[in-house]
Image 1 (cartoon, rainbow over the protein chains, first blue to last red):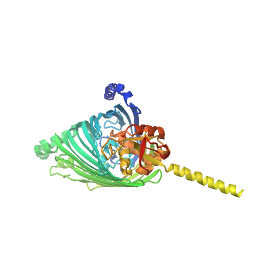
Image 2: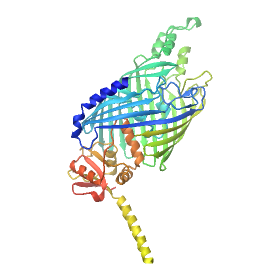
Image 3: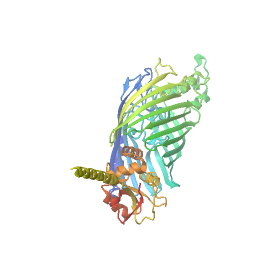
Image 4: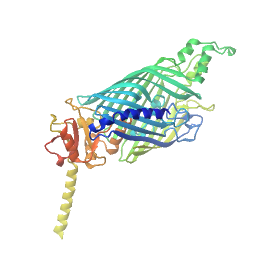
Length: 405
Length: 142
């Protein structure tokens, strides 16, 4: 319903631009394109699920021996060239969602005004780009892995935001700089403890800068905002901390409950990324950190480095990744302790994979990941069952087909 | 017989060399109205990969491609950006599906590129050297 409404609104908007079509020769007014991924993933850990993103309700391991859902997606995009200086983009995506469906949603819908050759302004729904590749992380064809390293990418549930940005592109001394500042808000749903979390991100403001020099790309990013989370199952936990459990002799601790709850809590994202790609080989490295007010979300620093070599249509690659906690995962209060330790996602992983560009517009990939969760940590896993043991190793094997058109 | 065989071989070699040199003759052009006389491979690469929107002089820059799979296109990208056709495709998929930018418009052949580039100093293209005329100037011969 929402999709239909959005599309009809956008089409009405686009039709306003039709008369401008004839003025700009050689430029198609409307252009359609798309992307997608099909594949299967298998995890050796049977007492928990491995998922691609935090918003997915289940994955491979406990729920399914092999999941064909966690990486599957299709996206359709329309680009409208309304005038020499004005364009519009609408992108709809269908992928495995918090509610277990593939119901499509609008991932992008914005107008872009090129006000000066080096300066553009966009308004509408834009991709959230906290990390090096997050604004195209749904397009498997654009990167080497089967999915971006989960240590950095899995925990962020925000894929887009509604707002505006301003972008400046300038080449100085042979270095191509891009600087962007943005502001907006987002509302997203994800599943935690069997219940839906309604996550409200507002007053998001941030900026990033990238520099291309020769074969190198450098990028630095900063965002801050306010997060409010509402989950019925977690509210029960917060109330228990607030009121205590008198029969068990546990006193109430309202201050601790308020501290742990996400109620307009300040949140920060920071990341630095680097790519070197002279043609036959490449490395990509990134480090990211989430911080802000101390609450039930554990602050963490995560990083990875990937290297690959291109042999005709074959690209073998290696990745090492790690996630470390920056805030306490324990608490003297037993309920708070259970809550915080449940958010301990520290792990390290080693991955080896092969991408095959077997056709123009299509690739096949196979990847093997070996994960080692830190002591007392769940790592990238969710849906933990009673028999699940923390601090163990497990492996995931994935075969994906990506396409663009 | 022997001379014929030899001349046949020479002819084959000559054709081979002609094919090689024809393949090695893609040049980067801008309008004759543009004051720039020379560009580096890095500068050209940044414009064609959507990383730079202007020439180093500050003037607006817009790249013009040739058809996907065409000889000049494959040769140009391999020599100037170090990327093959699949890498260039993946590069533009990144920029396009993140909503950041659209790939340059693609024209059918050398003459169409020369004609458009000649018209406006903002354009930059690549063509076989043989297609160059006085309306455009060569700024890089990679």
